[in-house]
Amino acid sequence: MVLFQIHETDNMMNRRLFLKRTCGGVLLLAASPSLISCDQQQRAVRFGVVTDLHYSRREPYGTRYFPQTMEKLKEAIKVFNNSNLDFVIELGDLKDQDNVPQREQTITYLDEIEKEFQTFRGPVYHVLGNHDMDSISKEDFLQHTSNHGDADKKTYYSFTCNKVKFIVLDANHNPDGTPYDKGNFDWTKAFIPKDQIQWLQEELKDKNKPILIFIHQLLDSFSDISKALCVGNADEVVPLLEENGNILAVFQGHHHSGHYSFRNNIHYWTMRGMIEGELPGNNSFAVVEIGVNNNIRIDGFFNCEDKELNRTV
Image 1 (tube, rainbow, N blue to C red):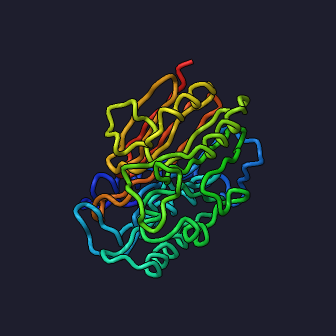
Image 2 (image 1 turned 90 degrees about the horizontal axis):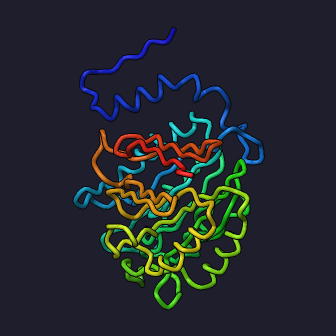
Image 3 (image 1 turned 180 degrees about the horizontal axis):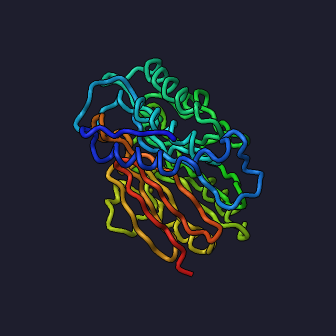
């Protein structure tokens, strides 16, 4: 028998993390994560997700505690490595920069947080966020990070896991289609260029699988969210998703407070940013399960709330 002790000074979020780790321990440790493959037929797809880490060693600014996201990510990876996950993905803004940005220092921050991210014992994937190009180029980011398999060194891509298709989009482009580069952009103007939309149309011709979309900036510009947070040409993209008929959800970052909307049987879930709030007690990460009925369960930790995203048809 293993005894566990919770100190009275622990805050509510730490209690919740403790309970999830201990009460679910038998299930979490039932199989080694290193033995899980997306090529194997499994009962459900399970993955870990984080967003908006903004890691650097700069001084705190408001509610953003930049250096602390290293410890927050370590806590998340511990949970992920004991949760029988098929993969882990981050939804953008993995790193940040100093008050006076310098390319080499920014790359150092990226290397440090990427090293920790890669300690997950399984496939990992990245979504590009605007801050990932704040003082470096997309090529810099790609050369200092790694995606699993054929997705490596790509800013947008798709992969299939347990008969569920995942599509990663890159909206970090200016209105003229040029990519964000070394801070030379307006973060309120994010666009998906024509060639990527054409690629997406081809990907969406696959109507035999349920699909989940990952993107940094928000696509649900039809909702009550500020348009400054949304993809500028979302009205071109959303109809393509709705026409497909098999899109389960769109997972987004960027808006640190989180958001949710729903239209035409597609859930738009914006995850709360990991950067927000000081340790101890503040963090945000989740374990997501897509069941065989295509219902989605988000098991949130700390500031990330649990949520059920169910199909209505």
